[in-house]
Length: 407
Ligand code: DNO
Image 1 (cartoon, rainbow, N blue to C red):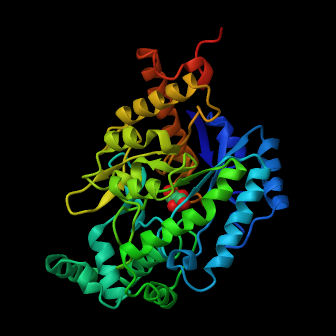
Image 2 (cartoon, rainbow, N blue to C red; image 1 turned 90 degrees about the vertical axis):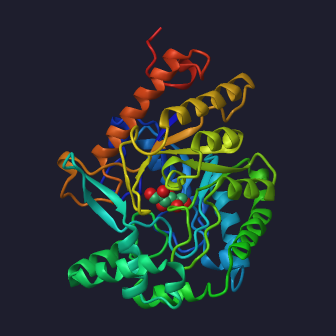
Image 3 (cartoon, helix red, strand yellow; image 1 turned 180 degrees about the vertical axis):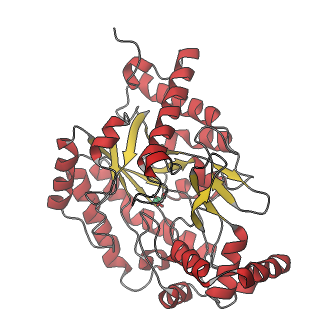
């Protein structure tokens, strides 16, 4: 696997040099200053690529080209935004980057209720608390029809939780939920959030899926011509929020997307953490089923809690079987290697990390501090080496992985 590292651009407090120090050789980034659906120009993309090359690294994956809500609703100026998407793809292809990750979550991208939840180790993790979320939806945002999205017991428990919240806790929760986690495409306040959600009134999962398939039919021919691989990122968490549909949550969702435009260029980002939140997602089975169309891998995992809450666990210890998943990806690389394919090295990144050590208290992007991801990458690299050592039939270390004994 190609070891990559997410970098949020020149404003990221974790500089490119640290990615190299962590042992990554590929960078995952986007033009974060152009994040409202406008087209990226070749000049801007090339300038960013040069910065990355100057640090001795390669720009391996674009994560993400933002997806304007009009494309998801397939209304308003969506044609123009799809045109911008295609122009951005052309600029990216020109810079030699081959893989593009994107998502199709309405209004909000990844969602957590707490960005600094104290772990028994005294480090901090990001966490989603199901009750806090319900309390926000029902009693703070006061979303129209919110009561339809929660069970009676949940509503009662959420009311009690809400009644105990201090104003500063409400403010912190709201900021975490809607004012933009790192990499989110949009940041809302209570009124703009209500308005954005209301645009989806009556919009069903079938409607959203139809928009997604129509979008794929619009952009995939250009992606194929440009030699690009698109990799859709699963919903995080993989279920509807704020009454908004989500359609990239389960194995069946992924099947429909891949069939909706049946081309090797139409692929997935296998995000173990996002998919792993849903207990019925059998991750090793899904990794196997979608291996041939997996163009990018996010390696992290969550620990599921009994009431639908979850928090980010260690990269190698949580509710998912990370070692089996790594093995399946290495087997896929082996197949691609034997077939002489150019895309035989699948980019992976240590996704998210705990807030640890000297990083505690420093400014930074939630879940994207240095030490936590350094630890995650080091553990994953160790696990991959161990698997390759024990099972020499997997992707051969000398060709695909730095760190095998020097010859
Ligand atoms: C959060 C990320 C998401 C993800 C996008 C992909 O850490 O996993 O922001 O990058 O959803 O488009």
